[in-house]
Amino acid sequence: MNKDKIVIIPTYNEKDNIEAIIRKVMSLNGNFNVLIVEDNSPDGTAAIVKKLIPEFKERIFILEREGKLGLGTAYIDGFRWALENNYSYIFEMDADFSHNPDDLIRLYEACATGGADMAIGSRYISGINVVNWPMGRVLMSYYASAYVRFVTGMKIKDTTAGFKCYSKKVLETIDFNRIKFKGYAFQIEMKFTAWKFGFNIVEVPIIFTDRQEGNSKMSGGIFGEAIGGVIRMKWSSFFRKYNRE
Image (cartoon, rainbow, N blue to C red):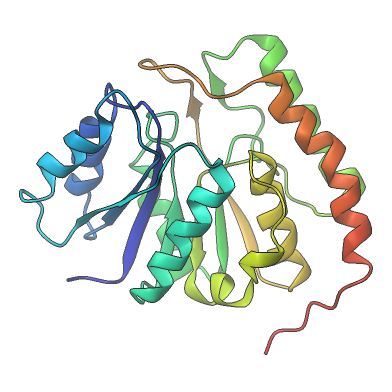
């Protein structure tokens, strides 16, 4: 089994997308493996994944959970699994093709040969590169990132991005028990924590395309969690040390 690269994809009711996204990742050069973190989808997502496992032996894995426990906990469970299995580069990616799987290669190269410890697939590093979002949602996302930059001091343009590559040392350094956010604000907290530890974070420009199949899990309340929580996150950071061992 190749343990260089693992793509973590959380799923809940993604039967319309899951086979296509897995097959696309499997087709990429570079032997990317996939870990599906499945939250007991009633639509049969898990069964579709399990059907594909024999076809791609030791490249597709599934971690089944009892129900919807939050995006942050899904990724943390995936991170723990990836570290236990000694993967060198660990990716976050959505199941719905809003993230172009071809960009996994560019994120990997940014870390493996470009000197980054974390590479972010960024919607805003080179303008606003979002397709099929209503203007209100684009503005909400863009100015949420600006707000996070203002409060935290990070220079990251796309602070809420969920398309990322981590080198193993970043995830080995972060204490997952101290990550408080469970929803989409988890993405901010992980970047902020890596930044506070002094890791080299780079943004790789991507084009984000809203899903064509299935239902979006995004809502205004999700952004509200991020806006309300980021000040508490910043305040708490004054009372802890970020020393790498």
